[in-house]
Picture 1 (tube, rainbow, N blue to C red):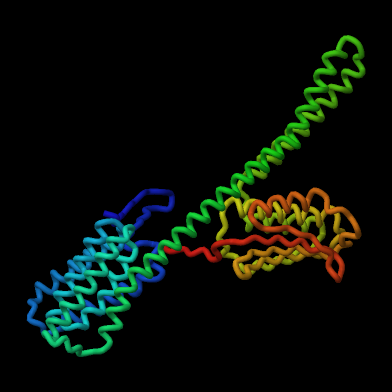
Picture 2 (cartoon, rainbow, N blue to C red):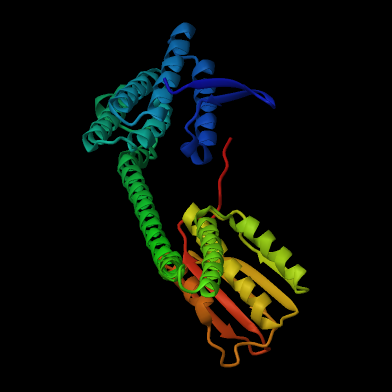
Length: 385
């Protein structure tokens, strides 16, 4: 059963992890289910129906069991649990009245999460049968309804499984699309790393190879030149080690929050005052997205320190209509026909891999502004304990 109680000892003491309700449904349905069960128990246990008290308790316990199974499974067990739930509602409806039909929403919603369409079809047929039986027992062959609200309630319960099915299908497709996009971003990052290895480390190692071959030829002819070449090889080797460290650093995960702190410290060290306005601190990003954004932010602030002669810097992070936007502005000397250099090209490359964009422009008041934009799927992190 999915009910799980796990205990483990750690430095902070005993930790209990109890799962009694699906986390993905807790936000929207937990309160509704609890309120519905409270009303159901109250109505049934306080009624004057001919059902004995012990029978009422058994029916309610079976209802709880069916609900619990239907909450956790989406296969044949969901179908059987929903059929049991509808059957119990029929029994209660016959003795307690058509008011019990309202509780059909509980299983009408859950059956819409079934994996197979024919399970949903059987559930919808059972809902129709449930309304027919209860109304027939309540009104007789005349089918005279005590409340006209029963018909729209039945229609909504019949439509609900189909609506839930298509909503869940849409969520699944969106989740698969997000996974595919993440994989594409990772592939782009691998290709970028391969290009970096080829363009930087490959070139450096080639230089070491050429100088080593030259030195081996000169070792018996020109000792002075050999010493110079060996010094060059040593310097080139140190450059190669530095490039390896930089590449490894780029591959490691860098959180946006930690990079903002890092940028703030570096700017303040350079006597540049910094103001950060993060209007979406609970941003949910993939590791690759967050790392590449952090590297772009690092590149932008490094350029400010090196070239801008700025006294002030401001970083704004906003989320507007599905687009994450980061502005890094300064009050420095501006572009002044200077080339954008490799900094902007590397930022553009990283942002393009995220289906985003990077740009740099002069500000009317002086200085420059770097703009990073990227579409994202989610905004707020929801932590449900």
